Image 1 (cartoon, one colour):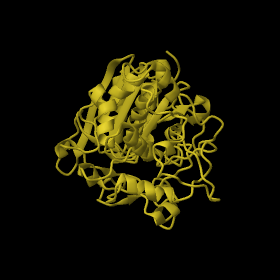
Image 2 (image 1 turned 30 degrees about the vertical axis):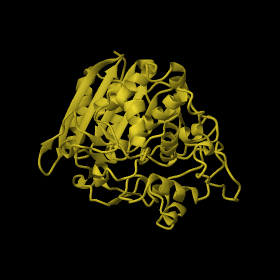
Image 3 (image 1 turned 30 degrees about the horizontal axis):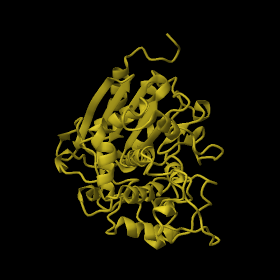
Image 4 (image 1 turned 180 degrees about the vertical axis):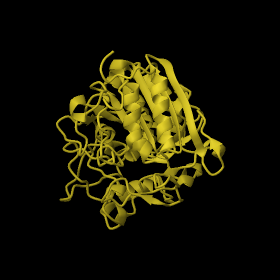
Length: 406
């Protein structure tokens, strides 16, 4: 046996990781699914969905997805591209003439769908600003997780009033680009975003529990925030910084039950771990009837090549998720080319096509389930590393301007 490789089976290793996170009160509840070569090798629901009532976590729990929605909405745009209805490299002003943000010096800028998909469009997020006096805050821009009573069109109008942070294509910055992409999908498809995503992606794949509104509150886990001595229940409107020096995210857990909340492509969906695994497996296996393999390969290519992703050594970015450029630089056992992202409510996932692996780990505890030790421990358990042999967990609050899936 190789040094550092655990003799325990994969299910035993993951179960130990989950149990430790629950025992140490870093997590309240979790669902972890692992597929290898298209076959399920681990399915686990552990802990509780609501600590106060004792409601157990279940495999069919419907989680607030936050940035886990980004790959779903990105695939919807790529389906339109596959049908010849959307040119990824044409200026989006053809379809959204009213969305015309300018550069800091007042010059007009040309943004393409490919730049929206790869977060190279020059946009940002309000929650990264240092305080409530940032330009996005002053413009009243919503990040898609608050209780803002505005339309998607109004949010884009506010977003376009703020100068771009850099000329599109010359930098990388995690951003509201997927929300703009959602508006683009609406315009090209000719229907509201929730209808378009259902017709283009979730319907064809049978992702029946995934959408922009959660219809059954009894299946939605309560959200918790890491705290001492144990996570506390997320309050409605509570602001939780994603990293030191940022104003943070004003969370509205109630938003997912509101049919009148604007559909945020970058953060506004809910769904089950099983539904999301179905999407990942479809992409890992080449797109099936949803997308041609060539577009899946394009999605998985590093479109940020030559650009540095802040605080994310070894990582690049594809069309909707990060792509592992250099495992050694990233201090990761994953194969080069591995896809990965997560969600601010406490989620992480990755696909290692070289190893035939798709892994989904959804929790109800932010930010441990997105960027805490749990994420690294699950990854290493999948690859059979013992704690002594595993790379040390990052001290970064893993979603810095690069890695923070909101």
